[in-house]
Amino acid sequence: MSYYRQPPSRIYGVGAGLPPVTPVVKTIMIACAAIWLLQFGTRLVGGERFGPVAWDPSGVFGIVPWRVAHGWVWQLVTYMFLHSTGSLAHLLINMLVLYMVGGDLERHWGPVRFLRYYLVCGVGAGSSRTRMPRPSAPRARSTECSWPSG
Image (tube, rainbow, N blue to C red):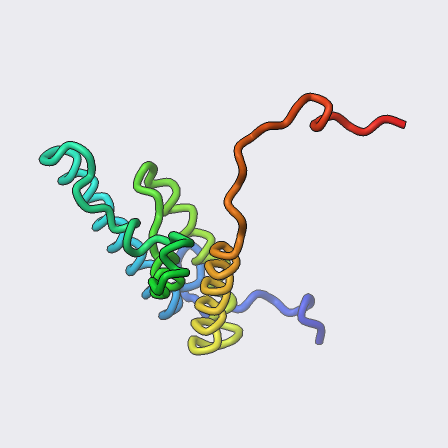
């Protein structure tokens, strides 16, 4: 029988019909939420007591290309768990996508293979980010931005 002709499985029990959160995805979601609360808390405490933020975790744990080049290689992993504190929606949308995509991958591949995939993709993205040249100042003229004629 074809995959597409099978009736939907009922392994999730009674509820909204949503699959349960898988263990690795749950751990990543909890880590991201806890680190977001830490970031948000330091932003609040630093902003109220000391004027500008006294200590920003993203300076140490976020990816800063010149620091990675000078030995701060842990940033290639830790940046994956940082999110913008400017909007809670940033964190929630990222966690929703992680739940929707990551849960299926973890159920299909298993927790070890999924975690390896998550970390390799994150470190690979961070590595490519550190190798990208810094954007130059915008100096485009109208002729450079127009479609070439003829």
